[in-house]
Length: 543
Image (cartoon, rainbow, N blue to C red):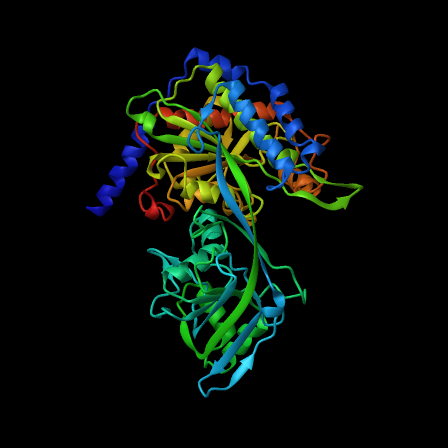
């Protein structure tokens, strides 16, 4: 019966998208009039030196906010932020560990204590919710620290309530998708899982990464709710008493008197052989943190739906408005303008909004265009919006994220990161077929791009989401697009060189706008709301 139900759901999902969405002539004309000059002008303004890299908390970022609000008004997009506003206010908190205060102690069963060394044995994660992070408990080794429903759990057979877990970086073999590998290997996911299992503290060890700096600056960034009781971000959000990274020598020392062989255990957990066990130690740690706060804003525009019932549901377009500000000088230039990352994404969303309005598109569902803050600080603005949207959270049906479109060559194929987990893959294929684009698998799964941009914030909130990236197809015989992209990225990504004098293909930018518009337009006009694929691991926490 269960297999029959799963098959039925799949058939319903395909049937729901078997009918192509009709595109009115006015919408087709608006799409054809996507203006590459306007796109270029948006990028040029946002990447101008006077904005000084759009770092949140600076005058340059506020100039970017004001520019987007002004463009929303000119296009005719309604306010979608805080009541009556185009902006959603949030508090950004930076937390820095006071290194001199960091202490950690091991105690064996005989009561012998051993003080661990800062930056040799351990480094603290900044605690965003407490000036004093501390905790103690018996140690439990939990392999990779992952809990993957229906596949594998390092927590089977061990009780970690009130204890300190020790885990290693990575994931076991056999996880079926690169997006899932990225998700379950994320330190933030591991910390959240440890907290959910009742741990009081966590120590994450990456045996392949040595400690090299004796006095590092340890900083993290989160968004806070107005009451400052909850933190939002991709990493450690302060739900454990403390969190540390441990060195390989620390891990080796724990195993010396454990009766276990570390090398063999690492081999076993890689092959999904649960090897979790209690270690013969009690562990305590403490350190202080310095917090600083400032206000920032997401910018939210609304295109109301036309269907009396469906207009209360929302498709969210997102792009991050921030960049990294002023940094280390390169060839005499210290302003990191972020023309591609992500002025081009913001420009794309502004032009998508113009297509909706100029084409009198009247989508059945409402569309939100959200420019988020602090993506470069750890997906902070999108984490806050996805958890605290300006519309009822349960009414958001999908997210279409735009980050660094990389429009540097003809756009002939695309990689829809995350779409394979839900029915929105049908919307992608509809849009790609209309434009004559090929759909490819992620050519660089090792980059973990799925957890590195704002669609991930929506996914962990249970909302189907995707992020369209460039594919590798070329119309030049013998041209290696993959090698070209990697060479380009090395020169421009998070570099001062990412300005308007770099490489742009604005015809590709026009295609990218049309593609993302068609994806959201088809979602907004399909009666059946997007659904996770039956049994999909991301969908298990959905609304």
